[in-house]
Length: 349
Ligand code: SAH
Image 1 (spheres, rainbow, N blue to C red):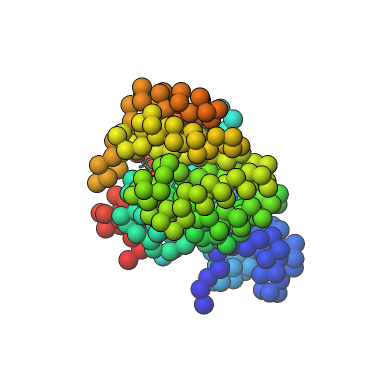
Image 2 (image 1 turned 135 degrees about the horizontal axis):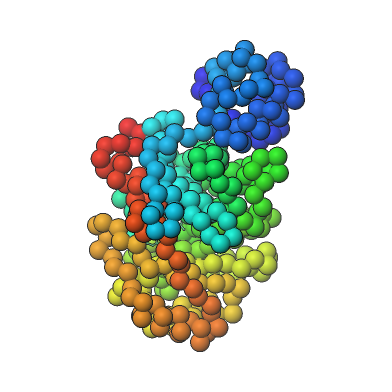
């Protein structure tokens, strides 16, 4: 029998699980609290009897993740974690400090199926989905390890969150639960490459997170060349879904646009983008593309980016440039796992 990850369980499921072991219900509350404090082992659960701790360790585990490596930026204190999962696979998270508090970027899958040509995760392919507990475990482990309370969560690490829909929804509900981490729904951002039917599904969940769309191009020819997902869900379909999403939820959408020199950063492309999204309840986040070995893509220069913003503003579209954090530790996601896999570690094989 596979052991149960206690981080996969909601409060009610923890109660059922503990009762099924012949224990009183109040024990579940104590154990649940220890799990969310980020205990590594059952031995830390000091108000639980040695006998019960022993029985727990036979059929379950705490979900605390093993930290395989950790890089701390000397520039801004950003911390990048590489975790090793129970089956030997590896994923990454990045802890960032902002004026308003700590934000964490987490992974939702081991690898990714989307195949975006500029992304560090694409060449490694897809291994498996993360469970809700493994997604949650990244936050709890980082909180315990760093001693900092995390207030914002971005689902922008390795993987496509909407391709692991059920586990991601379960994770969001767990992390939102007052009895657990209690992170408000509005403090989550979810980024997708554009799986249109799942955008509609998310819209119906009534979970007011911030939806980010990785757009990166303004027409189907350009977008399909760098994002294969576009061959299945075209820009028209994607933008239509976004318009309906903003109308139904009243929530502003963020469009992410990686600025790639000579590829998508001309004033002409800015006009195309302006025409495409003008009048929408949205914001554009320009990300100077991160250098990923083998892609050949180079980030746009400062002047080109400024011009791009100026053109967008003439369409009434507001754009900002993503602040770069942890540039000395290659904090862009996927890069630590990639070097671990390429050196023969963290592949789960
Ligand atoms: N699969 C999801 C979330 C993970 S990627 C998505 O596609 O949105 C998180 C963000 O980083 C996406 O906007 C993605 O397009 C972007 N990204 C990936 N590789 C990048 C690179 N080399 N430079 C800049 N942004 C990159």
